[in-house]
Length: 220
Ligand SMILES: Nc1nc2c(ncn2[C@@H]2O[C@H](COP(=O)(O)OP(=O)(O)O)[C@@H](O)[C@H]2O)c(=O)[nH]1
Ligand SMILES: [Mg+2]
Image (cartoon, rainbow, N blue to C red):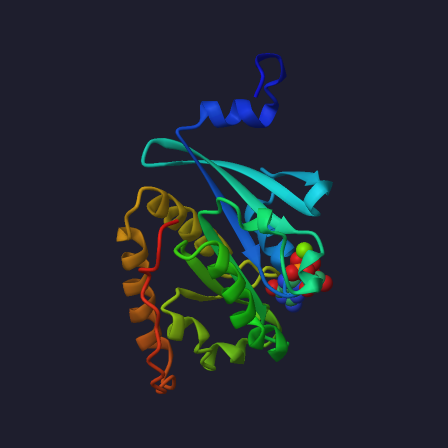
């Protein structure tokens, strides 16, 4: 940052109290971009950073009196190669991992994305999102146990009709902030809330795979 060349981006960072980076992961065409666009609707200014083939959406919000600048990173096709450039993960504070309820393979691929995420970011909050429930509302009766097994928050959403979209991204922002402040309070709160929701809305999900990895690996 030389004095003469402070860009718009940098100026915004100086003006905000906090700044977090949130990334989106998942197979092609699961609806990652649509979800972000849905959340950001009018306020967003996408910026193509062609070097890493990604789109960056800047979003500013106020949480507990603090101005928070959120950088949402979206892939721009690199996910086709089943792996993202390390810079995509660099300094991310939360991850929204998406699959398409209409294409089972996109659910089966979640562990691969999760593994790559954990190689670079062992501890950041990760939210699992089942998208396109508008196409078949009955899928919300099914259990998708990947999230539960990993101890991750799980949401049924639709970028098309907006179901739960705001909820997911607001939770992601809060979790990113909590992570940055080195606190798991908000994450715990959300997990409790979603657990209760689970009890009300599902009968199945009785299997007992226990290899949940509790979030205590090495440093960030
Ligand atoms: N029915 C339905 N279609 C969706 C939804 N979200 C995305 N799509 C469609 O899925 C396709 C891929 O969406 P896109 O956001 O480009 O996926 P990305 O490759 O993961 O970024 C597009 O044709 C979208 O219109 C949704 O919630 N419901
Ligand atoms: Mg996309």
